Structure formats: C-alpha cells, structure tokens
Length: 408
Image 1 (cartoon, rainbow, N blue to C red):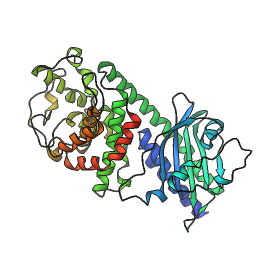
Image 2 (image 1 turned 30 degrees about the vertical axis):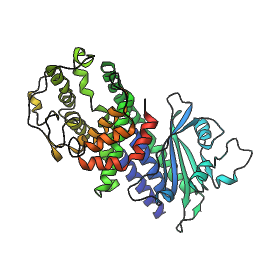
Image 3 (image 1 turned 90 degrees about the horizontal axis):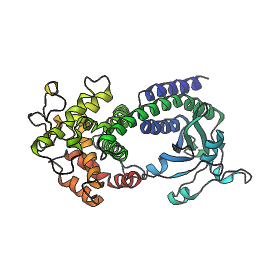
Image 4 (image 1 turned 90 degrees about the vertical axis):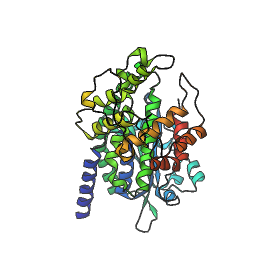
C-alpha cells in the first residue's frame, strides 16, 4: 500500500509540473514521456485528432531501445503520418470506440477482432512490439488524441504485460492531464487567432511560417541545451514558452501602414525605418510583461533582428522603448551584440531567416535547402550566434524533415 501511495504522490507531482506548460506540442510530448516513466514502458506514441475529427496524426514517438543506439544528443528521426479513425487499426479503434485496450502480445491478437497490428514499423526498425496499452485522451465526448504505451519492462529489462495496477495509474494520469490539454488547446486557438489577424495585414506571415519558426526554434534550443550540458528536466518551462513566443515574432507588423507593408517595390530610407519599427511595436504588445511568456515574446519581438557582431544592419539595438511613438520610424540607438541579445531572440533569428530563405514569397522564389543552410553557416559569427548556428547545423536532417512536413 505504501508503494502505491508513493506512486500516486509522484503522479500528482508530475501533474502539477505539467500545469505550467501552455503549448500543446510540448505538453503532448511530456504526457507521453511521463506516462512511460510511471509504468516503466520502453516506447510509445501519442496521436492528435485532426480538425475534421476524421483522422489521427502522430505527434511524437519515443523508444528507449532505439534511442540508446544513437549518439548522445541525437533524436529519433522526425516522422509524420496520418491515418483514418476507423476500427481497422489499434489506435483508430480506440479513437472511434473510446474503449481502452490492454494487449499482452500484439503478434497474438485474436483474428476475430476488427483491428489488426501493423508490423511494418517493427520490421523497418528491427524492434519487436509485444505488450501495448492504448487509451483515448478525452473529456466527456470530446476526443483530443490517443495515447499508446508499448513494452512494459521488468527489473531485468524483459517486456511483460501491463498490470491492473498500471491501468489504474495510466488512467488516473490521463484523466488528469486531459483538462490541461483542454486549456492548452484554448491557448493555441488564441495564438492562432492573433497570427491570423497578422496574416490579414501581411500575407507573407502565413500560419505555416510561424509554425515552422516555432518548431525550428524548439529543435535548435534542444540541441543548444545539450551542447551546454543543460538537463532536459530544467528546460520544460522555457521550451513551452519559447514555442508560443516564437509564433509572435513579427506580430508588430499589424501596426505598419498598408502603404508600406504592402508596397510592391523597394522601400526608401524612411519607409525602411518605419518597417523596422515593427520590432518596437511588437514588443510594446507584451510590455509590461505579466508572465514568462510575455517576457520571451517581448525579447523575441524586439531583438530577433539584432546582429551578433553588432553590425549596422542589425536593429533596433539598445532602444529606449518608453520613448518610441507607435507608427514612427525606428529611433536611432547603440547597437546590441553578442550575448547581450537574449538567447530566445538569437534562436528565433536563425529559425526565422532560414524559413524566409527556404520559402517562396510574392517577391522571391524559394532558395534550395542546401542554399539556405549554407547562408546560415556563412553568417555564423556575423549575423548569428555561432553556437546557435552550430546547434542548427548539427540537426540538419531533423530540420529538413520538419521543413518537408510543414512546407506550404
């Protein structure tokens, strides 16, 4: 009984920690990670329901056995796929029926069951899925996703079935975190509306652009943190807020006159300085800051165009925002450089420029992926923090996979 009480106390502690996470993707990843830890599962996946409620899309897959084969700091390959919500697949069946499945051996399913186990992922990765616990993440009749936990391990690292006690822990934890997911989706909807508003003013700022910049920024930070020996457990709050704040990086453009924002030709010097002032206007939206997310959003908006070397093309520098008048050109200021530029702004600077280069715009064709990577590399130590560039280049395969998945 004492062991069970300790486990429940551990679960409650985790739930309190997850309550601080506002970004849906970061929260989904943590839900999968922590559920696996609670029942000592080797692997698992978490799926999100599509907006039309007709399909499931994988958000994260984890596998400790495969992870151990990688070099330190590397992640499993980025994967993206969807499949219909139907009774023919295990996760689809759970999503359709809301029934929980506790499968002892996926290769020994009763042939009369409507769903089948797909062995192809095992064949491709030289892995063997045995035990599996699958449950819907739902609130009343609203389905948010499906949680799939694979291969519970005993003390000898042998795969065994999930127990009745495991069912109790997983179900309790899932029921608790669903409310957190519901709130995270409300935050996501609010962020999307703000970005949609910005896109109405500036069609270049698409939903795809802000999603990619946010996703790239998280990946860059993860690698940078590994390179600096920063424990993952100490980064959860920063990651969650960075994911949201990065989506607001150019929100200040809503304050730029259409005569300038949508001008088809080149800017004159005055117009260029007004355009640069979007950094100040964006920062003003989050000043005074009332949360950590506000703080990161302020820093990213204000400083993601400052240069690492303090060169004259960087802006706005050490601007006194209290003296800036909305709509005016950017005021003159001393340059900001090096680590005086906040970390979050240095990260988003690389993510934003890479996406701008590799995406087609009304005024330019998309650069190739190779060209975009080369440009980021060439600007290391000049426009960009060399340590951020190093982290970015080290995860090239993952960045490329995200680009292919999320490109317009």
